[in-house]
Length: 427
Image (cartoon, rainbow, N blue to C red; front, side, top):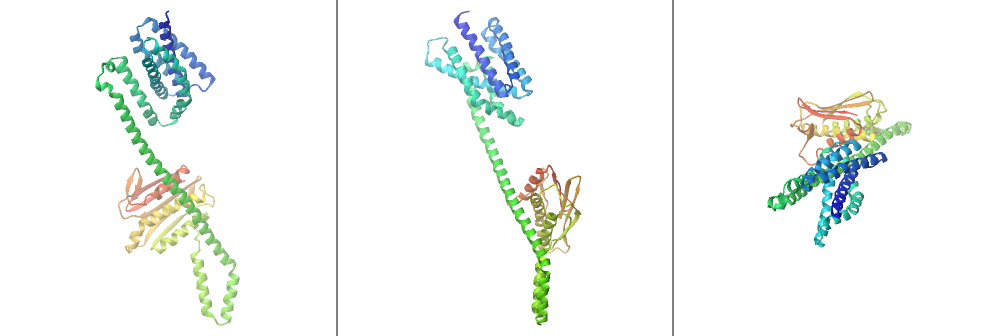
């Protein structure tokens, strides 16, 4: 074996190890000692037939059979080590793409140092280890993270390496289209880069839009949580104020008795009316054993009554619920707010019949079930089972309900039936 043959053989072995190690690292197949042992044993066994092919077949046939001699066995080996079906193929295609860097750097060295036939092969050998270490340190961790993404994103990631792999074999190895200088072939990969950049731009723009909507939704939820805490605090303060009035009843009676004894009946009546109005304004209706439900429903019942809408409440709930007070306040407040808002145009139009918003609730097997029914005038437009509106500021309540319901692995359904809008929630 002469020096040239030895260098060519070493270069083929080096590129095989380069691609194999990079593919295995992209797959996360080298994390355990057992996997590393099996991988290196497999690589050693794959190099044996590769060496035999080198001596038995000519160079052209070796290049054409390379996917069957190395890539296919490597894919099977990585599948055995990782248990993943698609990602080993994507890892091998990505590693093949990075091999282009090694080849191009060697071609550049050969162009700078002409005259030696072995310059390119020697340069490829020299660049193998430094480039491999750089890619293992910087590229491999980023590629491995893609394994945890969805199948769709994995396919998007692997599309460019797969396209390059097919282009390289079709135009350079199986045919001579690339060396023929055909404009269509030469301009193909730049066009692919342009298309990939466009897809990347559109995809990231869409992702940025979705991220912006998600952040807006999170901010709205935080704001509603803050408002819910404030509303519950105010309602409890009102209830405490009523309790204080009852506690101070002796003082009120003493003052009234003094007014009557002094003939100041008008002042006594005025004082009685003032106390009565304050107590009525702060009175909390008892609908069930849960204090939070009573506070929220009492507040909305008073709001509905002022606009000519009746809140019809029926149900029973225990004091302890599987939902926090703040989350429950956000869900109920949004649901009842939407129901009252839908009824408001009919109430303002002076409808002859009483407008009812029905609220039903009960607990069963540790779950909370809610149902709100309200009349609706306009045809409600749905998208994927969710009511949508083109009016600015609308739709946030529905999104909030869905977000909070999902926290508890619950569900919610929206539907219209016989001129009524029905919302069902379970938590």
